[in-house]
Length: 282
Image (cartoon, rainbow, N blue to C red; front, side, top):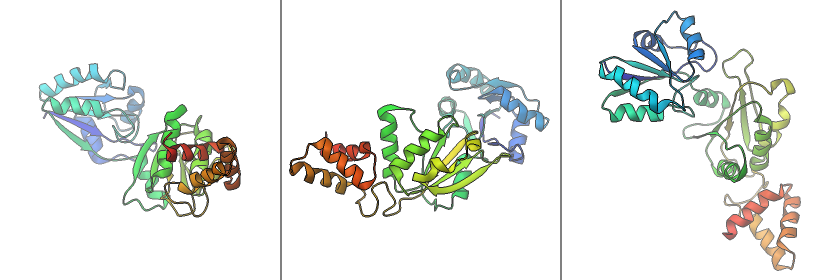
């Protein structure tokens, strides 16, 4: 049967497989894997000898032609990424589109996901949430993403690598203040750890030996008075902008007014500056 199976695989613990996943991997004509070395470990664990081909972000277009040829012959293809659910902060969407456009069926084989695993142990209501994935590494794009997270009232799921986690936690602390943050490290693995702390304390909450492995972060829902401005600001941040405007009207240079307001609220100047410029349209 000509089907592309989009298969979720364990995010750490190889026992987190489903019977359906094992059957699909065994019966497929080929397994298209983001990293064949990692998928080979899973296959070896369960005695699966289906041929493997690489299909990652950089060769997906070229590989799609080969996989479409399998489907045209009436054979099935299983697609997996390194861990978790394909196309969720992972490659896969482009391949799915190509296969569907060619007229073949695309079927999910659901299973492990760092998103739902972290949400389930965060203690935050998750009737509605959003996934930001990995933040941009630097510059304006990163600042805009952090501001977007801070302004989102629902829980937000983020991913981060160990060599960037300390900076990311520090940045989240500046933007989120006392908003709760779930820091989940090495989910389902031997050294798994899960902490929920105020965002401004998160960077200091990690012991040096914990700064390793993959991190999934869940920003808790917005709580009145828990943001970086402290108690009382409106969600759009107008009080900060108004404080600066009043000082400027009294004769202070804008830069000095921003400095004073930031100091009074215990905030980084750039946070106040961003609010002022955002409200001023400049």
